[in-house]
Length: 132
Image 1: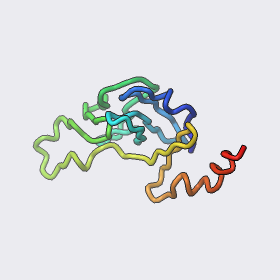
Image 2: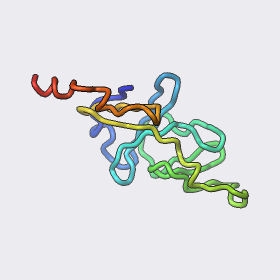
Image 3: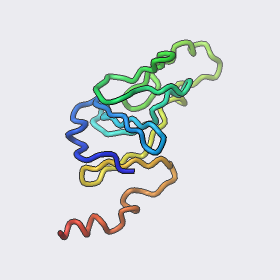
């Protein structure tokens, strides 16, 4: 599913994000601390609350419901109230990643972890456009 064009100009700084509502699902696209573009489901792993709206810049993502906090790489860095919960492993409760690929400045999200790559989907289209 194509998101936008001009990815580098739309997300120039670390922490820049934009929320897209695609086919009934909310997706966060952001630039992480390593300058990598990432996509995540826009839901807290605790109670499913929507995390962000619109666009902006953030250092981390905090849930407005119970204040769980996620790093820009999607990892859970704070889970208030869960400190003494037996068997709770914060590493298992990061944001749900989505495959994000870029072609010619356009961003594409794949909702399926088993889905094929963008390159396979596009086939020879990139080569055809190079000849024009």
